[in-house]
Length: 502
Image 1 (cartoon, one colour):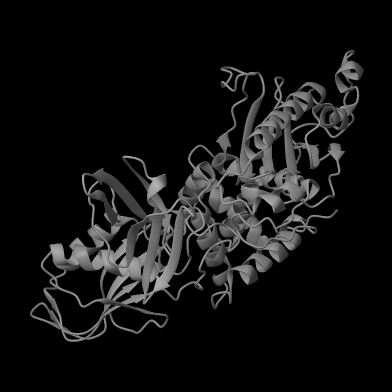
Image 2 (image 1 turned 90 degrees about the horizontal axis):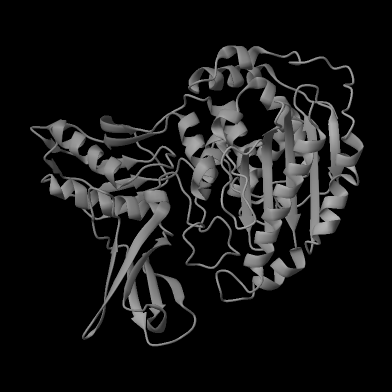
């Protein structure tokens, strides 16, 4: 399979190398193998270590469903092992590797997202004779603290009063009700997406049991602020199931929760379905704390010209991606992915269109010709990726030096699940987990320093399809299956680390 690398991709790799601490430009420039490509002599115990290969490891483990994997030598690109390596399976959050590379190529490692406050008319003696616009710029990391800082800067710019409307522009990206519509409505990892986000588009729900029932609160809390919101509300219902219900009630996120599920007290984050109104609601409160009274927020998809009064700038993209890969945040993946698609001009028509554009880019730039993504986060189980595709990409980008510094170490564990200190095999990888779907892809370094690129995908798709009918967040059998899948991944890594060393 040929790998076509554009000049733009090379430049993006150089930019990421320059931006990531500890990664010099030499790593990105090196196109030649680090060692000789001639076949290496195998040690005397190689046959014993290799007996049966990865296929035998998988067979001995007996994980229900399909398992596909591939591994290659990073220095030479040699394919070392593959089991059903051309089979496409859901990659889950391992897909965020491709999203990261896509965003780095299209946007650049030092790209920053900007949220602005714009006045559409003149400001005279602190009074705005026109509309005030909170303009989202696709920043997935905007939180309540940042919005509060934006309100403070607006105050310092001299604004005291607004005579016109208060608008929230969210049209930088297309609106998506839920990242994956098949997910239960109340799951915070599948919120709405648009051109503005706040607190990863999640609202904090807290409840306390008292003598007369439950007291509930919905707010946009941070470590510094706790503004209550008006665009989301919760009612406690006298029932057992379902635990949560949701409906759009005249522009409000209207929730109910089963009282029997609450206990004495607790809290959780719920998804926001109206990101523009959520950000506007909170900014309205924060501006009021500075003495600036705004009208109720109105959401618009058109951005009018005007004078910028204040701006909030995100961290550089490479740092956003590092955090995304560490915490596997789905909203970040969707927003940077759609932002990358929009970099060439107009925003994509939909999330699926943007995912299709990313898939075509991956085929052209990374040789991932069999990958078909339905989103940028891997939350949809309709996405397909082959281990061979991912390994092809991993070998290429490892030579560019653009990915490994963003990946977090993957700990090897003992039989009780405890991380093993000073394990001789080092793994830097991205995990992916859905109910009855598990993936792992990245790099392993053998005890002698040999570096391998690998991908492991496992899925029990019939069980997953049945699990979608369950009212439980984690259906019966999902936890033991996923636990066993992770154990199999480690066995394969240990196998490859022993067999494919110098």
